Every structure is written in C-alpha cells, then in structure tokens.
Image (cartoon, rainbow, N blue to C red; front, side):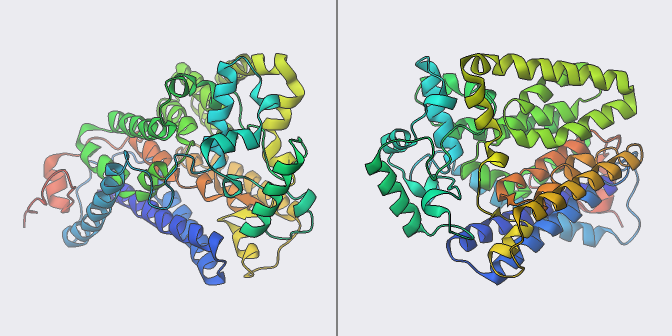
Length: 457
C-alpha cells in the first residue's frame, strides 16, 4: 500500500508544480508579492512531498496489505489523482496545436537558438561563434521578449529585470547599430554540443522541434512503466499523467526533455555499466544534468564500489569530450563562453525560487554572491544527506540534486517541473515487490485505466 501512497505523493507534487508554473508566468508579466509567495511555497511543498515519497528503500511496499479503515481515504486520494491524470491527458491532446498564449513554435530562446545553431552546423559553420541573434529571430518572426537580457549596455542600471519597453528599445537600437558580440542579449548557444547535434535530423527535415521534445517525454514515461512491477504499472502511468507539470510545460515548449530522457534511463538502470552512456548523453545536452552527477556516482559507489564509479565517470567524460571535440577544435574559446554563459554572463535575478521573493519585494534583493554561497551550502548539505542515506534512502538523490537551484540567483521554473518524472523513475526501481489485484482491491485504490474496485468488507 505504501507504494501507492508514494505514487500519489508524486502526483500531487506535480500538480502543485503545475499551479506554481502558471502563477510564476503570470507574476513575471505583472509583479505580485502574493503571487511570488504562492509560487515559492508551492515549489517548496513539492520538494517536501517528493522527498517524503522517496524516503526509505521501498522494500515490500507493494505487497503489504492496507490496514483496516484505509479504503475510504485511499479511494479519495486516487479519485483526486485520477482527476489530475485526466487534466494531464488533456494537455497531451493539445500536441498538434500551439499554446493559446503563443502561436509560434519558439516559446523561449533555447528552442529558437538551438534550431538556428543546428542550421548553422548543417551549413558547416560554428554556431558558438557565428550565430546572429537578429537574423535568427528575424527569420522566425520573434523579438526581444524571447531573449535572455544581460546586465550591460542599456540594461546596466536596471536592478531587477528590464520592462518590455526597455527590451524593445534596446533591441531596436542594436538592430540599427549593426551586429556586435557585446550586446545586451545572450546570443551564443548556452548548452553543450548534443543539445544541437541531437536535433540535426529533425531540423534538416523542417519539423517542429517541440514535437520531438514531447516524444522524448513519452519515451521517458514508457521507460518508467517498463521498469515498474507489472501490478504497479497502471498506477505509475496514472501518476505520470496526474503530475500535470510534466505534460503541460513540455507541450507548452521545453527543450529540457532532451536531457531528461537519457537521465531517466541512466537512473533507472544505474546498476548496469551501460547506464554511463545515457548518463554521458544527458551531461552533453544540458548543464542541469551535471547537478545529478554526484548523486548518480554516489549510488554507483555505494552499491558497486568507487572503482566502478571511477569507470563510469571516465566513460561519461570521454563521451562528453568526444561529442564536443569538433566545436573545441573549431573555436575552443567560443564554445567555452557559450557553455559557461549561464554563470559567467551578467544575468538578471530570475526564477521561481528564493530570488523570486526578492524580485517581487517580499525579501530584500541580496548580491548575486549571496545566492551563490547559499546555493553552494545547500548543495553540500544535500550531498551529505544523500551520502548518509545512501543505503536507507538510495533514491532520494534524484530530488536533492535540484534543491540547490531553488536558492540560486537564477532559479528558473524550468529547472523544477520535471522532478516528478525523476521521482517516479526512482519509485519504479524500488524493490517494492509486485502489487496483487487483491491487495489493490482491499486498499481501495484505483486508476483512470480501470474502474474503482469494490473493497472487500
């Protein structure tokens, strides 16, 4: 029965993240202390629920019968989860159509810049050096609102974030003045090479990359279902759909699924040496995967020894260097400036974590170094907790990995919306045992894939 409660907790956390993301987007357009407080608390609550869902080994959780009196609360819980799952399915139905708020396929600068970078590679040019932001955006009919502004030039005196009017004015002035690398907008591709190389065939065919990212989500969900015990699979699938943040913000436009899919595969089968390959792919797609690296290696070392962890690290490092080597040979400086851009460039405080409260007047806005220090302290503490619980709660690290970013100067909501996917992958590999139909009936649990069973009295 506890296995079912773990799944339900992840589903509710995903719903909380969905609400947080909706409010976060609204507050970024119209600042609101109350909205910022709601967003931050909802994400914090999701972290707590996910940590609770992954605490313990999970051994035998699916085989233990529910105590008397739990049938009604379990039915109520899974009624909520099933309703949420219908909402998640509703978002998947919207795949062919663009989101209501955005009629272009370029919902953020990552999607647009990755496509332009891929086209440059197809033409034999180095995107880390040659990408022209104004040409790229002009061809796609988008403008300054899809950029990442930087605290320099026209924005050097802006404290929190430029207004739409300031963004448009700087954009127009720069267009008239001609292209320059030192503009007020992040223009280099900000991710390692596989974020570009993996979408080359898709871009060459002229297809919408957003569909590719949704397919990556569906593939990751399928891997979770495959790894889960057969009796738990309907509940796991319902939980994945009920964690509405997964489908809503992937369909709404996110390139993050390109790193999430291989990361899920690596975590699900981390006892196998070949998991180092998808792990390396994730690392070579996006820097967010780097935060998971210590926790993946820690669990490999805890189960298989430090020598095996060193082998995995060597394999991952070798693949990372190999796929980025062409760009390093082209222009190592440009590649490095792009990859370290998220931390080296003078970016504005932005996100849905602690800094969101500061940007909306709930807390003072501290120097960027203060948030960096807090992020480092939380990161060290998270790793210490994972080490201490490496045997008693071996799956906890997949959630703790993202916790430091909640306290960062840049704590974008996109960092957190996939956490339910990682958490359900962790539950799928727990030694819960299989859920028998009789146990499910007695517990009162049900899914959208089957009608509510009658619990025996």
